Structures are given as C-alpha cells and as structure tokens.
Length: 108
Image 1 (cartoon, helix red, strand yellow):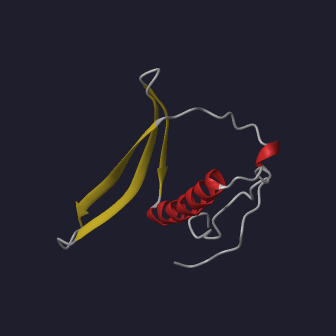
Image 2 (cartoon, one colour):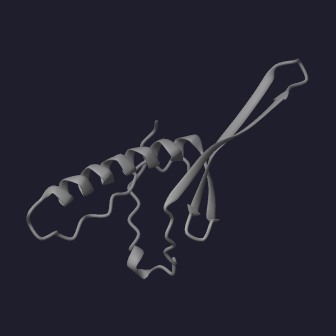
C-alpha cells in the first residue's frame, strides 16, 4: 500500500450533521464479467450501511474502495484502543487528537 501525505481537516468548521447509528451492515459489491478472450474481469467495493434501530431505518450508505476500507480498519482499531485506554483511566480526559489516515492513494 502506497503512503501519501497526511490530510488535516478542521472538522469543527464543517457543516456535517452527526447522526446516531447503533448498528452497521457491511456488504461486498462485486461485479464480474468475461472479456473478449474469455478471461474473467472482477471489480469490487465495500458498502457500509449505518442503521438506527430505534427508528428501524438506515441512515446512510457509503461505498468505499478496498484501499479505503483497509485504511478505515486501521484508524478504527487505533481509535478503539485509545478510547478503551481513556475509559479505564481515572484521570480527567484530555482533548484526544483526531486520527486520520495518511494513505491518500484512493483520493488520487
């Protein structure tokens, strides 16, 4: 996986409205076809659907590349480890740094 430059975005200055999701569904979107010489060509993405189970409805679907899914997995695991460590701590929380991926190959 090629590593690109780190992207720093001040999320406090965006107009993104947060939604609550208490469940998630992850699906593989795979497309395959035979080429002119009979070879099989495949392409695929990962679909992530966030669900609000209180309202019994999906609130958003995001389709990402395999590279982005791998980067998301890494960042999520890092954030979960940081959160678990902070929850076990007996000290007042510090403002945690926002973790981002440095892999920008999917953006190019």
